[in-house]
Image (cartoon, rainbow, N blue to C red; front, top):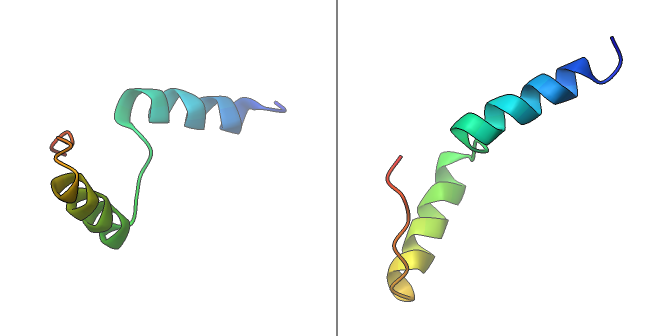
Amino acid sequence: MPGEPEWRTYEERTRKGVPLPEKTADNLRQLGERFDIKLPLI
């Protein structure tokens, strides 16, 4: 059915979040520390 895979992806990412490469997540954590922003632990 058209749109079904996109809808499933939307539902999953709404529940679990958007997957990020480990390097990207590390960079975001470092930026958060630099600006004293608390990021959720995953």
